[in-house]
Length: 237
Ligand SMILES: [Zn+2]
Ligand SMILES: [Zn+2]
Image 1 (tube, rainbow, N blue to C red):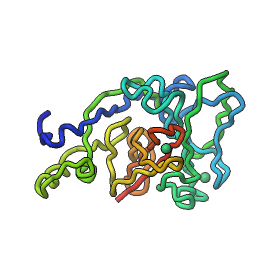
Image 2: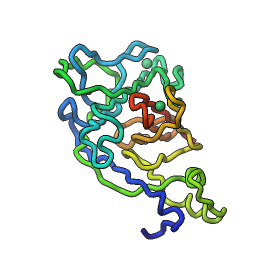
Image 3: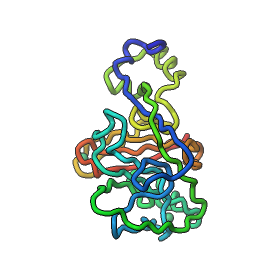
Image 4: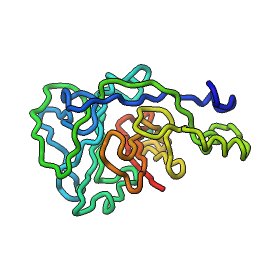
């Protein structure tokens, strides 16, 4: 592993970069935007703040993730919906940069029974769908703050050198270490109080034509024990 200091190498984690193509695919496919899987009787989620349908940002078929991410985050279909209404500006009104904001919906639904007939609502500025057709496995490393949390002491020089590195990786990715724009901001699980861990990083204008504040970066996190406890938060500089 060239250029990775020997004391940081043990902190390597796998991350997976989504490989995408234009299009929607099956309802249960992993995708950005497009048509979500809905069970029979389920309707497209509406924002509790403005009443308008939220956009599907990401859907992951957890049973089809690359090994060993498959099974790690639970079973079924993970979905993230996020309100992009500009009037009212739900992102501001609901402080959607914080985890557990009401204008974002994160959930895992099970592929039991029949898929419902999906009524696709009118959404202003709806993003074009991108189907995730594969994953590119890469190595990822934490930022200096998390390196120190892991008990690895860096000198000031090492810390400066590390901040010049491309790690943690920016852009959309599954797993790995969060590319924190501000400090380390994992939320705590509302059920058990444990720190939640990264599932997926959604960056500004990577696969989704969406900017979180001023080129912010967002993170879907999950409790390791309570897999239905999911959150999304973002920060920008
Ligand atoms: Zn809204
Ligand atoms: Zn928990």
